[in-house]
Length: 343
Image (tube, rainbow, N blue to C red; front, side, top):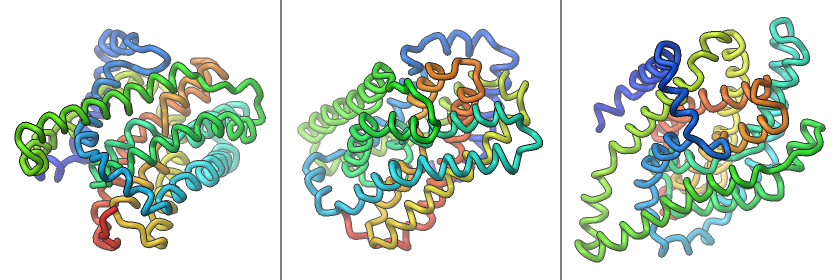
């Protein structure tokens, strides 16, 4: 596993290339897989994400959920970052690049579309993949679960007014089927599977076996699931990447910078507040990552499938995995700078 992780960057690049080539030269494959979706949730990707999340959910001990109240600052950091900082820094970053820095390269109407897509990403904190990033950065699984649950509840009341305010558009509606299906697939089902598995194994073989041997059997599952997800994501958009390489890069630049900015703001704030690393790292990951299924669904309903806004949300999907893996590595390398009192 350690050798595998040592060369993870090369594996990621290789999977991105394989995905692009597959989309370009074997178009029937991504076309078939892309049809297996409902409410903009793709089921092959959902299965892979489920497999990635399952090891994290195995670690959720409900006895430790009650300890979340001992560290309320972690929830404050998460909520303030995701709802009072992130949407507005995303708007500012996207506006700066699309309307000022890249003014000569992007027509103003298209720049407005790209800005809309970026705002939709910034106003939708992650529900699914954040469990993967928390797992890889050795976050507290129980606390991460509560952080995600709180964000999902806030989405219900804050997403629409924030998007309407920043974009100045009316008729913004939450696609309830996308939101509810994502919560069921990426939170409820793997959580129940983890609870049942944990109870059954501990009852049969004890907690020591479960913590020291059983959980380790799933170490490679998360990384393999990530790499396969990358291949599928880039296969879906292989033709788009090849046909619009310049605009893909132009959209990606502010999205990547925004991701790093929000992560370091959140991570640094958590450290300044003396939060344990296992709370600080997931807080940073939640702030940096996006609920891209929700963003894509809203973009399609508001602006259309072929719009610049939808393209921007898709670019957000493409850059998220490699960038978040970089942030996971940064978090792991700086973990020794935190207070290690367990949450």
